[in-house]
Length: 209
Length: 209
Image: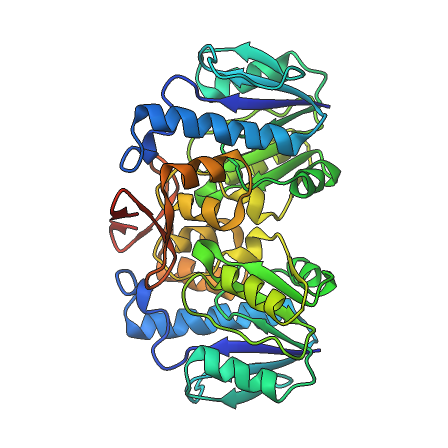
């Protein structure tokens, strides 16, 4: 099964702007992408980037550039497919080979890995008529879209796949649970856990997020 | 294996105060507790409450009251045990029997279910010397505490067990993914999903959280 990893290279991770400047966000986004590619192992992977990618990816990974919005670019892949495609987001640095294996081993015509706050962090599509829509509460919409075309939606219950890194507080999850390039990048940049009342935050350049 | 479910009855879910008043938080906390008890099924469960519990729990569930801080109360249970105890938090309304089964089926002397922001939402303890400390980044500390007594820590990778409901934005996860009493309580109270840029929020009494 082909695996597509959409990647926003044009202006990555804008919601991390309170913490990281544009160059830092670009570097960190590439580190997360490389962690995801690592977790995907030797699957047939294509990075689907919205702009030419200056960073290097492993030689056995294909690279397509499509500057349309995410939903359109992914649906173009589904249109051109035989109905068997996986879509795994590039901002999942907690992903491990074990979590990815559970995703691909899950039964169902459309396997959804929910993301925090209603997102869809990964999909395994085994039905020719299913199409994506990443706007809004996409995890709910994808369940409904699957049923609407007669497909059975199922879910993979994974914290590691649910934790996409979009907001400053997500950086704490990377420091707590990830062991790849993204976590190393954060540590080298000087980020560290900030224990406080409630959930743990991240301290970076004197500020706590 | 005995399962202990700590429950804060005295002043539950204070971090939800921006959304719910004290009576609402009490009702909602009990609804979440009942969802967790449902997911635990016919296991040997004791609710460990920090104050007398006015709400009803299923007749086959034991109730102990211990007004000490969480860490002390749980360690008292571990002290009195044969080294085989599970601790499952009461604010996990996304928990399902399948997620709970994965927790109990996981190998390891100390199985940890991480919570968002460094918490420890569930533990299966199979080692007599392990003790808990719920302060700070407890998931990290529990891994280290397990190793320090010669126990092997392992992890159960579950979004449903990771999602404790502490902060207003967590209510969106309940509406998106839970199907028990907590979700029903929120819906009856008038809470609904608020789709916006980024992660989905909750609209309640005209405000979006």
